[in-house]
Length: 408
Image 1 (cartoon, rainbow, N blue to C red):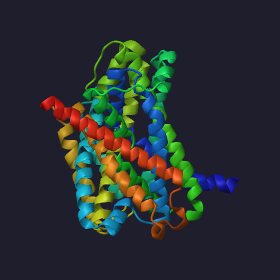
Image 2 (tube, rainbow, N blue to C red):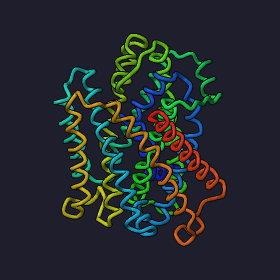
Image 3 (cartoon, rainbow, N blue to C red):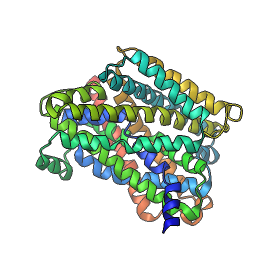
Image 4 (cartoon, helix red, strand yellow):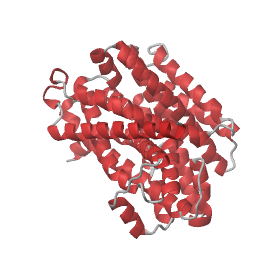
């Protein structure tokens, strides 16, 4: 029993971290906006999304363990460099916006504690760069894991907001839907921030770098399941806290930091501080992992050396891309006039639209017998995965048609 417990502690991490970081600064802003604009009407979405997150993350983790290769690496080998290049361009655009939102989250959360962004952003950028480029995967993972645990602050803030639990349960158990552009945008954004494409690349690369073997996969599977459920719970309570305070009083928010400040008169200073600490923690974690995931999938897709354990000399492209992404994300966050909410929500919607083609690659790859052996998908895996793909394509199509209808 002791041996098994030690093995679980040694192998868990990638699943919990990958799922938790989906609730980054952009995610918190999106969930806060969903609660502020629609109250509890989008809570029901978190049940199917969490189920899909478990399925998708498990497929990627399984591919990483069995193949020993990252997702981008497999796409390049099976579908060619041209397909991989176009996929990487789309992901890079979405991720740059996401990285900016992470540093914006750091700036906004520290301003609540009267620390100006001209101080907080450069210090955070340097610390993030130092941890990844000068540390090892094991040391970085310990920091990621500790940060993931701090997400419980949002669950506490949800209770402090004193919601009407009858309405919360109704919003959770009774699905509601409308074809308006704001609702569709928010729905695609919530899906895109809960199951982001880059999360799948990060998870699979992390499992590979951690060196998990097939005989130990059950522990990684447990890690993935727990991570997805906790991530869904955190997102749920962010929406509850915003719905109980901001929606009820007709308050609209521009950033997650605005949501934290808005909690003060309705839920008290403790809720505001908890929300701000949660935002700072999520933003720093996201500022580490999103550029890291981006560096992973670009280098794997182009055939360059990659890995946190490798130095600048061993993996110059990997560490160089990570450094450039930190700089490009941090500089715009220094300027208060940057339209942060628009950048954040746009990134989440783009992620939601990109998720369908990425999922198609994942499902096709995980079903290849020559690659996965007897670890290919079960029929029910494929039913859920393909249903999700069709739903995402349908949502994206309705959103595009709705937008064109408004123009013409």
